[in-house]
Length: 179
Image 1 (cartoon, one colour):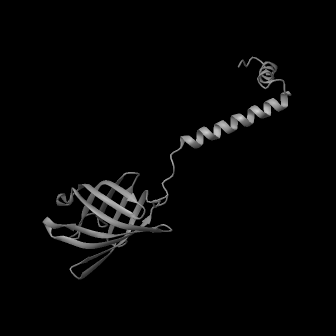
Image 2 (cartoon, rainbow, N blue to C red):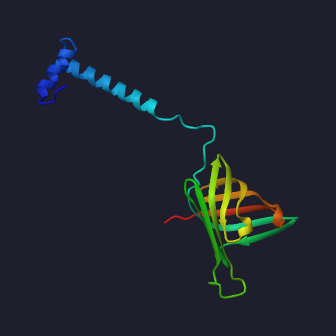
Image 3 (tube, rainbow, N blue to C red):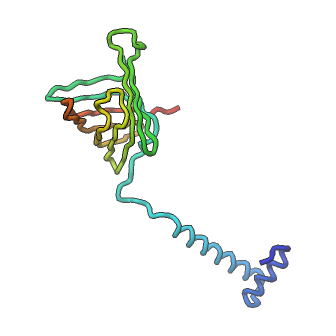
């Protein structure tokens, strides 16, 4: 098609539609073009995976509390008082960092960090801990069930590392960091 002028375009349309009026020809061409566009775009997109809709887990999360249950003993930690921990999740990786709130200036000084890959299928969240300052934890996989209600993420699962004698239920509650 030549696009030198509006009249030349209309003439060519009229020729291709075997003498129908200009308005009808333009309307038919527009409808055909839109139909073809819909077909092309509809066929081009992969089908949505509705079998396991994932939770909106990506972002930065502040740990509010943690509960560890090990050999019948329960330890509850309030991470809003003397400790602070955050977890950051992007589309494929996670990282966590934790430290005491006294800047390491007393006997309760603590620091920990780690990260790696993760997968999320529905509410099943699996961490592959590739990096950790507690090196004996590296290379282990941890499976959790996660729920999100409003801006609260709850992560629950068993942490088990046989060679160092760890087997415990870990329940963590996080609050989404918004700024």
